[in-house]
Length: 199
Image 1 (cartoon, rainbow, N blue to C red):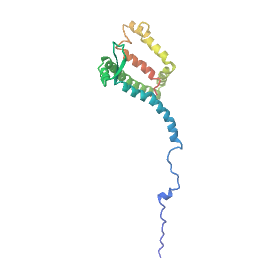
Image 2 (tube, one colour):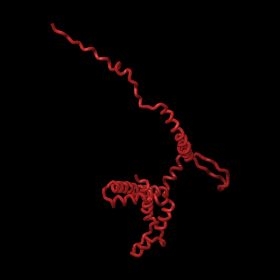
Image 3 (cartoon, rainbow, N blue to C red):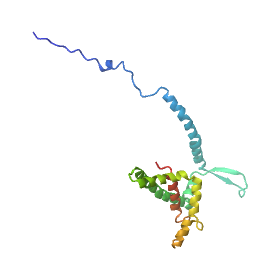
Image 4 (cartoon, one colour):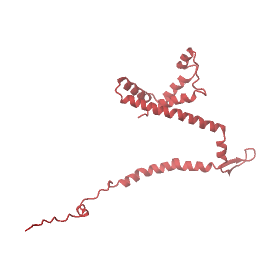
């Protein structure tokens, strides 16, 4: 005589997990808190940035003209893209764009490389290297921005700068505020200020 053992059927997965509460990952009232926090920022951004930008773009398609040698009543005239054409063909504007691009090309790589070097020095085991990096990061915080600007102006101005006077004694004449060296001088000041916010 052979005995047969029957295994009871397993309960469905849905029935087994039906009594467990479903986790949604959301905290009660989270949506309301997000709305309360974001709405003031959105309204302020809309009023301060978006609306003025759209209004400025709208005004750029118009021009104001005066009659009677400029003493008559002002009249606003729609000119289309004429203002854009005038600006984009202005040599001074194009030169300013070139100067800005040169500043970016010089400043950003130096900032990235300098930040990386300071981070490596802070993370290194060299005691002198860490102290030097900590000093470089601390100095911009210790000197207020206005005082730093006056110091840089003092160091850059010919006739009163001890640095330029020392270079003149070595028969090296530099005009750090001249057209040739103005961008490197500004980049140097910007790097000094940016080192205060370097992580």
